[in-house]
Image (cartoon, rainbow, N blue to C red; front, side, top):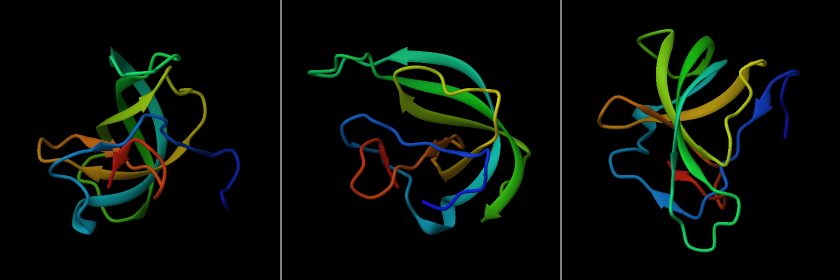
Length: 115
C-alpha cells in the first residue's frame, strides 16, 4: 500500500453490502479530505460482536486525485464500529449513489460497500 503520510486508508469491516445505484466508473472519485462525523446508525448484524454501524459524515475535500466533485464539502457514508478520526486527512475512494450521497468503497475481497 503506497500512501503519503499522514493519510490513512479507510477499510470497512462489515459483511458484504451490495448497494444499488453505485459502482459505475462515472460515479467514482478518489479524494483526500478531513471528516466531520455527523451520526451513527447501529446495525443489527448476525454475529456482530463489535457493534458495526453506518456512519454519516461531511467530508471537507482538500484534493481530488481522480474524477471530480461539484462541491468541496460532500456527504459520505461508511461502515465502522466507531467514528474515524477528524484530526488527519484521509484518502477515500468514493462512489456517488442515486441520492447524491457518496459511499466509501472497499477494496475487492473486503467487506462493506461494493463499488
